[in-house]
Image (tube, rainbow, N blue to C red):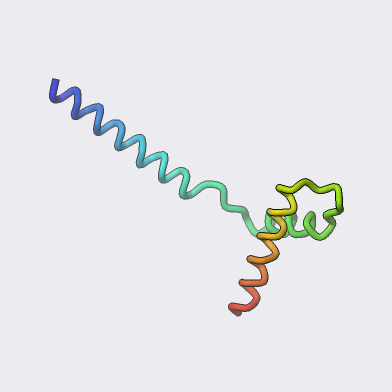
Length: 70
């Protein structure tokens, strides 16, 4: 019984660590994707939804921060 519990705990830790690793390394945009998104933001019109506006605002602020650091 103790071995079974130990195996279940070890399996849950392994699953959690793999999930954390995958979450930490996934979803980053490449430079080409960022450039496309910036172009879309520049062409954004009044019909854009709130999510798009928020993403564009964040990208513009991040770009300004990067420019001031150089």
